[in-house]
Length: 373
Ligand SMILES: Cc1cc2nc3c(=O)[nH]c(=O)nc-3n(C[C@H](O)[C@H](O)[C@H](O)COP(=O)(O)OP(=O)(O)OC[C@H]3O[C@@H](n4cnc5c(N)ncnc54)[C@H](O)[C@@H]3O)c2cc1C
Image (tube, rainbow, N blue to C red; front, side):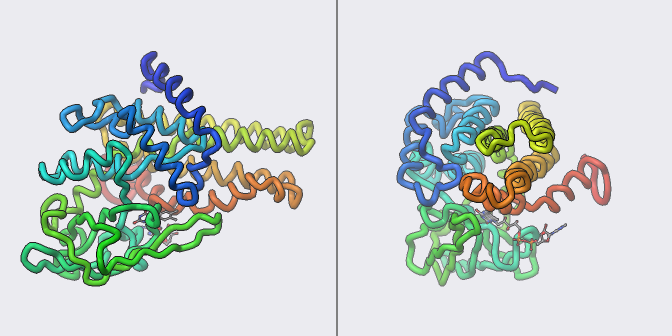
């Protein structure tokens, strides 16, 4: 297993760090919604360098770089707290590259590459999260349009996005994964209502109500009733950049700084806790690099990514909780750590829960239950 980056990739890391130095006060990793204008400006600046299309094929306007380049970019962006990777340039763009018509590529890839077009993922519903195949938002075909009605919820960045990458039912009600299609919906179209869902950390997710919204059949990506394998395949596109270790490195640094500032630097329990967490942060880094290694070898990395997600998100929770355990109420005014504690609570849910991730490892790696890879 190769857990090292090449000299060229390390040189790119240095270039990214230098670039991000100008964005050090942004804090868009956690506050993308509230700082959207600045985060969008950052994405545009990345777009000017071609960095939103690092891994796309050159024939589609990308730079054709291997996955490690994207990993480096988003790992550094996470460490700098600058931003998370936009869904548009990952899941959406890669799917368009593979399954979009020439007309769809012309319309959507160029503004995604420049950081001007942003998507929200419309997968989950109030009664369909882990069991996504049970979703009920319905698209009825009427000639060359679909009429879409239903409700999506928990959309990240929904309040600021331009379009919804909608997974909806075009087949019979009980068709599960065999009756789903992918539509691109303009979030400003008549019949679309986007409203905020406030989160414990002050961040807003959103819910999207669709009331007889008309979507052109030409805006369906892939075959009718053929979205399920496409959505599964798209998950693999972003596995190496979704939970970058840089976030955990930075959380730990903030905890160490707080321990010092709180005068606990010589406290035996604090030192023991920090040593354990430093080991955990190292483990997080190894898991992230295992995902990258699997991607480099052309594997989907489903198991590695599931393990990485569990270890990464639970490390975030343990680091933030340690400040409260060591400092008690005195830690609360250290606003950042208290914020990290509230924020990290949802990390184990979004993008698939820890239980579901453990199920993937159990089945696919340990051969418990269904198929072994
Ligand atoms: C911060 C955040 C951002 C999100 N962003 C988006 C987004 O952009 N777009 C989008 O469409 N959705 C988004 N989601 C929704 C997210 O994908 C779902 O919340 C998640 O998949 C869990 O679904 P659920 O909430 O319906 O919980 P449920 O699936 O109802 O799960 C409830 C509980 O049952 C457990 N459980 C369920 N199935 C199993 C199983 N098979 N084995 C063991 N335990 C199980 C779960 O682990 C959980 O503890 C986001 C959620 C969060 C918190």
